[in-house]
Amino acid sequence: MIGAGLAGSEAALAAARLGVRVRLHEMRPVKMTPAHRTGNFAELVCSTSLGGEGELQAKGLLQAELRSVGGAIVSAADESRVPAGNALAVDRDEFSARVTRLVREHPLIEVVPGEVGAVPEGIAVIATGPLTTGALAADLMRLTGSERLSFYDAAAPVIAFESINLEVAWRAGRYDQSADYINCPFTKEEYLRFFEALEQARSHTPHDWEKLDFFEGCMPIEEIARRGVDTPRFGPMSPKGLDDPRTGRWPYAVAQLRQEDKEGRMWSLVGFQTGLKWGDQKAVVQLIPGLENAEIVRYGVMHRNTYLNAPEVLDSTLQLRADPTKFVAGVLAGTEGYLESAATGWLAGTNAARLALGLPPLTPPAESMLGGLVRYLASANPKGFQPMNVNWALVPELPAPEPGPNGKVRKLGKREKRPVMFRRGLNAFVDWAREEAGLRVAALPVPPAEVAVSTD
Image (cartoon, rainbow, N blue to C red; front, side, top):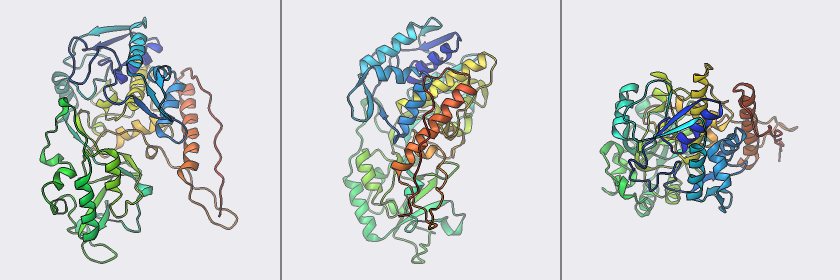
């Protein structure tokens, strides 16, 4: 194992739990990063929250899945939690100290201090995070054939398809090309209102170690707007070649969305890379016609990052296609968020141990949040791939309810659907862990939730 952050620590403990001896390499404190301040494992350098809890939250389902298999990170978080409403937040120092003790005291884990400059021989899990050092990054590029690995991360917001108003937006390509985009048209008045909000929105202030250095192909929309009121609509918001079916003419400006996943449940805003604060970002996005009620499943971010183009190089088991004895987890695998790092670390460590024991690596079921996440990593659109955090659009939708006696079906709201999806996902994950992976589970499946069909 390389890296003792959230993913690497979880991977090491998951493999050791299956009786496999682990050598865990961690360069801190021999060599520090600009972001870390201690040599402890799983140090949290930004937020202290591992996400919202409960049956309405996608992270709540992922937490439950990890608890069911004895995940070390979520267990340490439970034991070091602090009051934070409905979120799982922790005491930063106590949390990392607990994880460090768990790793260092495990009899099957040998901790080796110092930097690793090349991908090792044999079965390995690489979980070196967003600040992967140059030599190892270069060797990963060699192994995977990637042209780039470490660069400034610019992500655009991703919108849940079901929240897009298709009475305003429409599907089309420019100049009658294939209808691969959803187009949101602006009048001049709507565009000027949007532009004013964009000008006034607040940007994230980077740490000293991640000073912004933009390049033209990755320019945030707010930086484009600073060049003049017409610059966005002659750039990423150009209406050329797009006839609005309501008017038969090109709109004043257009915001386009591109399909992000195979099922078409997530769509990203084209050319809308942004570093705006999330509250301001949501307000600006919802000024786009057709996105008035947009549900943002991943906010845009701007920060230095190191990650693989997962759809090109990873399988859903987190194995590198170029070398199936190598597994990748955490941010390096294309995830966003503490909990996601821990979850992919657990799967990579479990699968690496299975491979060492002569067993085939496995992928969790699609209905589970972890299964949905790793399937996305392996099958997303590789063009402009950006790291992903867990959200409900990663798992299959529920079947449509049966019509009532009068033949009508009421559309189910989030508060009705998500507890059902939570229980379906947890049941599927627990059954898989017990029956296919042969693991001891700490939780029994929960009763399936019922959804009442109303014809009101």
